[in-house]
Length: 79
Image (tube, rainbow, N blue to C red; front, side, top):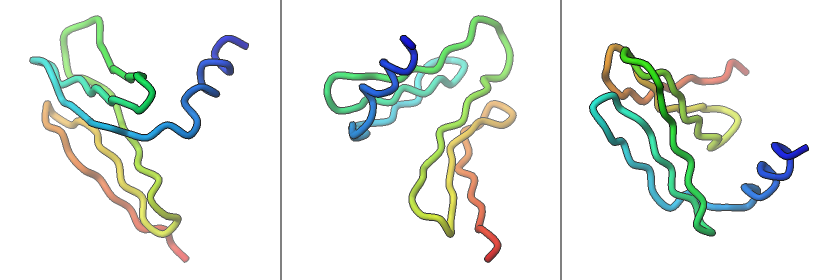
């Protein structure tokens, strides 16, 4: 229930900024309304996170990490 309440507060917010920070790249997403999303890891090694962009149904994009580098991945839906 607490998670549902928190997620409901994120609905309708806009992304203000996206920052990559740290020796092991962590993603920080600044949202309108004073909210932030921040990935983190508690162990050494490659970071493991993905930020999805839901722009349209025909093309999907996401930021992720692979071998210590940040990459923009894309896919096209098969219609």
